[in-house]
Image (cartoon, rainbow, N blue to C red):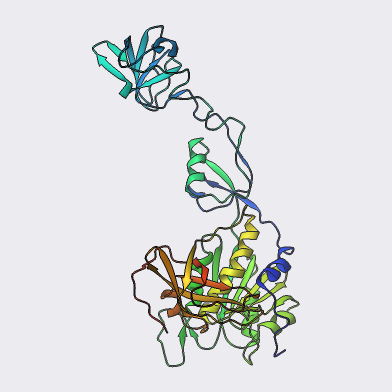
Length: 420
């Protein structure tokens, strides 16, 4: 086994090497109620107009607009009220000149009407209403198809379906949606020191917690199948890799470095695999490996928890997004903050610095929790995000303004900083 990493690859170079080896996944049909968080496999074309009829936009009175011309508070125009219309009902009355129908928001516009006078510009008296403001044709009316036209492409292939996309699909009475099948990721951990969650924790043993972190990061976009823990010997690793027939990605956790117990490199080669990347120019996360094995993509991430989470977020997740064919560029939550202290870095290496955010006046302050320490799990929960120091930047100085990629959904900006 080689005891040295090959030429280290940058993250974008590594993803570029794998991009041409990624095939499109097949599609499947799911019900609209189960389509949240999926990716469209085909364009969705509207089967009809929306709204499907001329619809009242405000509570008030449906009228012929010409009947209101010249109306004002000082010169009200009196119209006879000949009926009413509510949502879900079809008004049987057809409006003629100098007539009105009382209407509620969402009701079909009565026949003969072309506009609606809002309630606040009217004054009701028995069977008559005084109109206090003139309206133009089409005023306060949502015309049929004014939102979505029949035959219009509503959503493009590759669209990630969030709450608003599901709302639009359901509004058109579409009950089934073609989506890309989720990638299947088989997860293998390795290490003689690992035990499963809930096992007796003896001296020298650690819980295999990385699998839970990985699943939390990719679980929205991928299906995962955990195959267990391989021992630190080639045969055990081969057996579990051989059980990954039904997956799209083989993910191994640990064993990808160059130590005496790191066998993944030699195992993959002995099984006829092609090594594409061995080692990334990032910290933490350097011992990351990409390979093609048996027509499948193999991603080997480091075993130290912070390294594993960085590699999962920066390598595995973008690969899954590529497999799904998601349109657009992911926009991550960022906060502009001032550094509370200097951060050194090594030239040619991308550093992921864990930082805590606090608020001082109207400004955010970023304080490093940890620069190194790929195994310090507490640094992830005591920080709010990553400050990425690019390969070409030789650190940042105290007071520099930087972008922090926030990975917490809620920030406790008053919490006192704890460091390790």
